[in-house]
Image 1 (cartoon, rainbow, N blue to C red):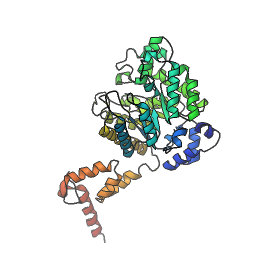
Image 2: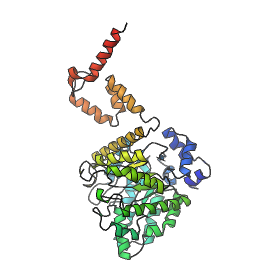
Image 3: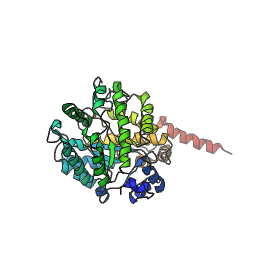
Image 4: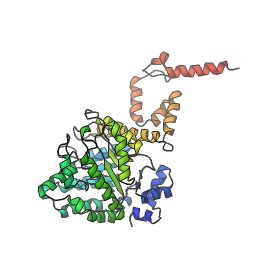
Amino acid sequence: MTLLQETQGGKVPESIVRAAGREGVDATELAREVAAGRAVVPANRVHARGSLSPLAIGRCVSTKINANLGASAVKSSLAQEKAKLELALRAGADAVMDLSTAGDLDAIREMVVDQSPAPVGTVPMYEMVLHRDVEDLKVADMLAVIAKHAEQGVDFFTIHAGILREHLPHAVNRVGGIVSRGGALLAKWMVHHSRQNPLYEHFDEICAIMREYDVAFSLGDGLRPGALADAGDEAQYRELRTLAELAERARQAGCQVMIEGPGHVPLNQIEEQIRYQQEVCAGAPFYVLGPLVTDIGAGYDHIAGAIGATLAAYYGASFLCYLTPREHLGLPDEEAVREGVVVFKLAAHAADVARGFPGARQRDDAMSAARARFDWPKMFELALDGEKAKSMRQQDACPGDDYCTMCGRKWCAVRINNEVKEMLAAQQP
């Protein structure tokens, strides 16, 4: 039985107990949320026997973030991907996806699964076209690659089964077109063969593979908007409704499901889009890329994405896919990975604080108290990126601990405030 089927039968599997323990939430309640399809615990049977530390994704737990890794045809290597994986996990990534499109994909994927205690995701479509043109792709090839990824221990797959042939005319006049790699490849296949999306037509067979290894679906948004001008268009919403249909079919087959979301979305549309997804997809965990709230942030798209991600998580998203400063520009290096993870951890944390998630603000309050008493070691310990904070402090080389170079000792409001408190205390009868 799969984890979903066990919870629907009233059981609380060990992976849920472990995931609940990490969060400090009730395991029985988490099991109920998984059974209802409102939470997932991605845990491939193969990975669960090895390095995996089970993790829950849903509104009943804290907001999680994913870090995309992977080699491209022009950059990176197995060693570099290993270094990026280690850095992403150290920086706080809750899950990772190997999106490699070149090199020894089996070796990279096996390394990531073997080395990662976090859930691992992939997009099998990328390997399907590694040594062939997409027009030459056969259904048997597709299913074979999906099965291989499952056998290797991948915990969740992005499957672009919701982009249908009848959706394509609605995307023709978009400003950004189809920006999903998987979506674009399948669109080309459908147009070339004048046929329906094979991942949609053979969805039940895919479910059978996923069920055998207990792999979770991350139903991909092949028609996500890649420009503000395209946000909320007919193509996006038609695909979303198809994803809702597929999510129910997957759950009936015993598979856990997440729904992937946009994309590029103006700030004022985020609440509407998140709430609509929650409504049509029966509360399935929403996994969002950003969303980016402006199209002009080249070099700073991790910030543009984190702004949208914070709002998305506040309104209902459970899983945030990070962006790095190199989004739209090139493959992220180690520093870009680190910065992307930290910025999106901030976004997830800010949303958890805003939605009143139990215990989320404790760290903030402890940081404020440490600042008030000039406890620099405690500040570095509590900071999300304490190493960077400590390095900045050390670069300034202040001779005293009761001020920084921003104001200097004479003008430091924190120091003056402490003096005022002492003076008032001394004046008390």
